[in-house]
Image (cartoon, rainbow, N blue to C red):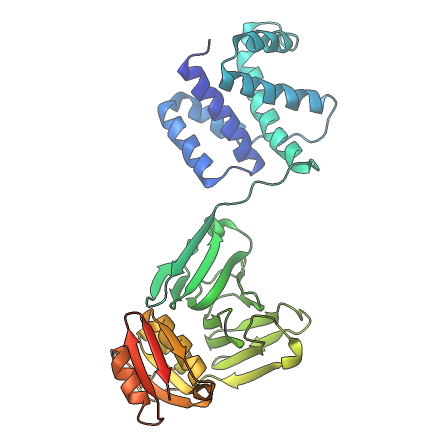
Amino acid sequence: MLCNNDMEQERIWLLLGRKVSGEATMAELRELEELLVQYPEMRYQVSVLGNLPVPVAAPGWTEKTELALEKHMVRLGDDLAATELLAEGITRHRKSRAGVLVALSTLVVVLAGYCVFLLSSKTTHKVPAEIAEIQTRNGARSRATLPDGTEVWLNGGSRITYQRDMNTQQKREVFLSGEAFFKVARDAENPFVVKTSRMAVNVLGTAFNIKAYPNEEQTETSLISGSVEVVPADDQQHRVQLQPNQKFIIRHTQDGNARPTLGYSMEQVKANGQDDLINETAWCDNVLVFDNENFGSVALKMERWFGVKVYLTDKKLKAYRFTGTFKNESLPQILEALKVTSSFRCEVKGNEVFINQ
């Protein structure tokens, strides 16, 4: 029966094989480092063997890879009978105990190649990278720094996902649902891409805002500084290069179905006139802005800002339009301010707001 030390050293060889083939996850790499702390005498061998080339298809390749996998599975299961059978197979390939180190070194390379062999199999899929997620609920906003150094602000009801090791990838990709402002860390050799259901935004290093809520009628990219290229998801031949203070808009139906016939448009971002704010990014400074928006759009913004549900009980209310800038005002205060320009009644019950004529 194998002792615990043998099991742990065998685990080191397997993890090294995955590292050499490039398939080790971040958790496995951390595990390998922790094991090497316990067995410092193996660190030199690992550093040398980690630089060996991975073997390609060669005579007896299938036999070697299957033998390596069987050896590892037997040790994990602590099956003595199978271990003896395996030992007989290994004995045929070595003539003395002096060859043990050579056999173990070969095993590392075989294990690394085995990972590549599995990837090329039609019935086996690549192990996905670890995915991280940042999400904000309605009524909250958050700020975070991504692994590559990019800063991101998330508006209420928004979510981004990305690979935990994105800083080591040739293409840094982020997937967004909702609204976010990015200050991208410059890295000319590894482009930064933000993807939504409507478009992809290609960046090198810049500051920009993307608004891509699934329940709104349009998706927007507003460039503050630098340069970005916007590519609509359903019309990838239509590529638009934005200059600072430009905004690209994709119009689609409110139910989330993109329809190119509704068209694209280009606008300038709008200066607010208060504290040098820009309407498109004022939310990053905790300022709520309505810019000649209908009541339906205003209701959605209030829902995300205060974490409430707003009901417009009369369809005629949706035609009302509002312009205003609010900082630190409560929901009742904003509703009272809106009443100055339009006639409506409202009732707040807990987290629900009912608006009628």
